[in-house]
Length: 310
Image (cartoon, rainbow, N blue to C red; front, side, top):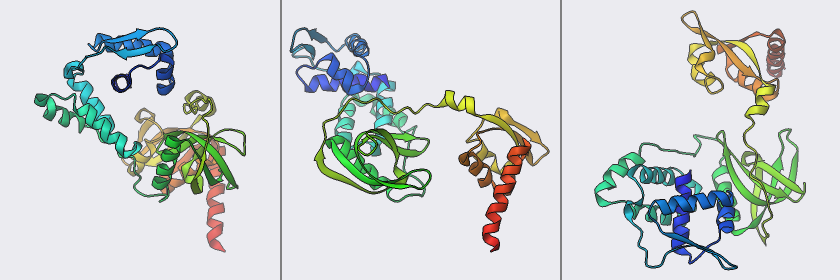
């Protein structure tokens, strides 16, 4: 969010004597043009930032300036508190405490209760109900390695179950669709890779420190690609599993079929992942068409059943 970046820039300028536009752009992974627009926004908000040219030039807050606590509105402060509080497990302990303390210092006494109520209107809990018990400890190891530029070694299983031992430079933690990943430069593959935490084991942070190389954030938006691959199939579901199906499509794709069932135009790609979705719905879901998908589901069910017959 832009307001988060503006607050961070102000804090950096208060903490540092002077900092260049490129250094700020690199830190926030935006363009220098965006940084200049941010500086203009900060100036318009009443914080006097001046720029100096030359080899040691950059941005700095004018001397003897005292930050006005009214520079942020109640809604902006609420948004900052909401984000910092809800994503607390994404940050290192000391950094979170200091960031919260700084933001709280902006809150006028007469607005404190109102801001606290608003900041509690959204709660984000990223911890799973159940699952891989190593995920949380691995997150802490990866965050420490990111902070200290330390190499990570681990065993990794690909989606086909093939296991390899890897060493990689960590660059970015990613949460996508409730699954944790991290992007790193893999020494074995000599390229950047996106690793899924649930497929890792024996993760260790090494003593070796690496010099960060240039990298681009991992591509996470595959909407356009998926749109070309997906087709719609027709499934008939019992109303008791509506919530589960709505995780993959919208209510506009539902058509009532009697009092207990729905016909659903379900987005589908012919791969194991999508077949596993349909099979996970059990006898509450029936694929009606196309016939080819229906036959393949039937084959997979028979194959599963034969495992228990012997």
